[in-house]
Image (cartoon, rainbow, N blue to C red):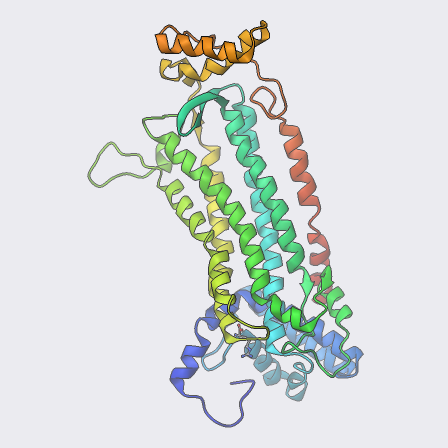
Length: 445
Ligand code: ARG
């Protein structure tokens, strides 16, 4: 069944090639396609394109389809192009002419734009909650291990004292900024494209404010050409925010791999979280963190893939845009899996509590000793030279006691302040409003 069938059959090869992976990928969009259709139908009834009776029939049938999707029984049939066609087909099978009326004033171009925005909003909601759980785990680890010191590095050379509290909470604070960026992407997503139709609006007096409110959007993409231009722009913006989360996690994963190496031995995982080698009987490898690093690095390529796929397109719809779904939509699940396995591993990670007693790290105290001389009145450059000379002469013995007090230092991690920042970002996402809108759409009114 083709919505645009004009009586000539399409060549089967062309049909397969143009449908591509849509029958599989559009399943991600199915629920949202139905919610969008309910809002659209309600609006059509207010401008006399549907009677009250037709509206309530459509509403009941759409809710029925929604339940089928929820149960996991929804399929896009052989010969049906995409989710939009499948839903319309199911409506016309059940309701005849009434089903055929739902597409007045819209196009699959604004329908897929809408579905993608609703899908993305909902994935962002899952992501925010997963990131906030990971944040809590990192913060708990930081608090529990704040007194245990470790060497800090610059150029991968032993540099200054650090601590496990500092290390864990650095990644926690990084996640706060990632959610700030994600919030900007969320606001760009949270604008209604419906009513832009094929990209140039409609001669029907559509009430776009009404569908904006019904679907719980913050605002609409006003200009209909811009609404269509949002395809790709929204995905790229969100993908940059996903990349930011992914970059935090992949850097953490690299640290863990490095710090688990025997040459460091800073952190350890229980044996059942490591993997072995087929030839070397002693191996306990951090494969989980290596795979996380690779997934998260791959996710960071997505904004660039989207750029390349959209950069050379003028305004207006093109079928090129369909392939964006393949690049963009699976990224959320991939990132969520990484976040969840990293959280699982962090809970069970143990730290080496007496690292700095080892003489190989003794130079981490050199700046502490310089600073002590400065506090006794020696000018900094002279103190630096004195300690440097004792290091060169091989006579340097570190003081070992350290006293860092300023904000964000190992003696004053400011975990509460970091937690407050996280709370503020999370509160500024208005997910409840969206949930309420969807609940309302699914009730008969
Ligand atoms: N599968 C299509 C896509 O993702 C849906 C829109 C089709 N529109 C069209 N004009 N052929 O872009």
